[in-house]
Image (tube, rainbow, N blue to C red; front, side, top):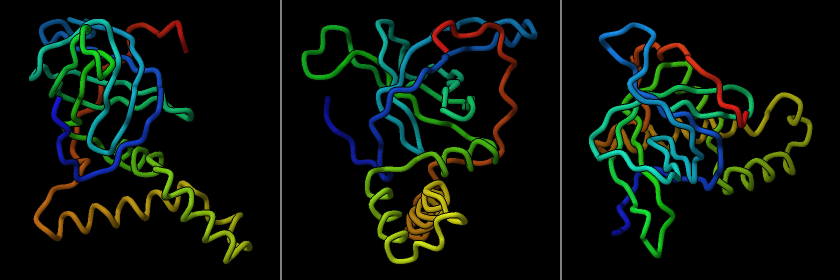
Length: 177
């Protein structure tokens, strides 16, 4: 698989994920539901490992089990890695189509590559009195907004867009959580 140029970093992280497709003809019903694990996460999408593969172009919801809360985001499968690939784990790359304002802030605060940790440590070494008022999550929010602003200034788009519809209600619970 050719490595694509990405505008945004990714972090290697395993989080429980619920993939589902609501049945638009039957309110509250699902056409599809499966549980898997993320392999990596970025502001613009997630790669989930799985022994089943959905075709690129399939729209679905990804419910990501973040440590503090679950975050449901509408997405689209953009590529898959087959079961017999010798280089990469099998699974699917899912791009986020849009994220509501709460989800956007959650992702911006949660997404913390290693360099953000180093930057936060440098700030706290310089200004230890700020530790109670200024958390790593605050650094992540500010740095991610700064990175998005730079990309938008050069003609790019935000990794997360506002205006997403409310996610469908959870029908079942993941027994692994």
